[in-house]
Length: 161
Image (cartoon, rainbow, N blue to C red):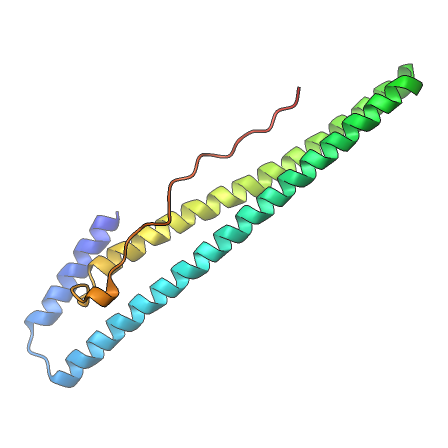
């Protein structure tokens, strides 16, 4: 789909340049194209920052889950020594509920992170397509390379033994 958008923008841009234009019109067109490119680069930087924040939140939630799991397993070991029968079953049920709750939280954050990564990748492809169709792309000051973004694996499912 990005090729279709790129093709139509190139065609429109070519048609615009085929007609006779005055110098002020050309200057205005170039300024507008440069401004659009700068806005896209700014938005891309914002999206990268937002992606870093989501990754940080996911890592923090994962660390909290791990700490909570360790705490609960220690409590369970202590409780096994002094709790019997019905009370032990209740404790196990509470532990399972807490584990499930934290697992859902982590999975929600991972899902949100993956959605954001997908959206970032789509926006980046759109920005690359728009930058490729930009008339100022011959200028070496406006080169753009994808050296940072790499595809991320799908959300990992946390399992407990």
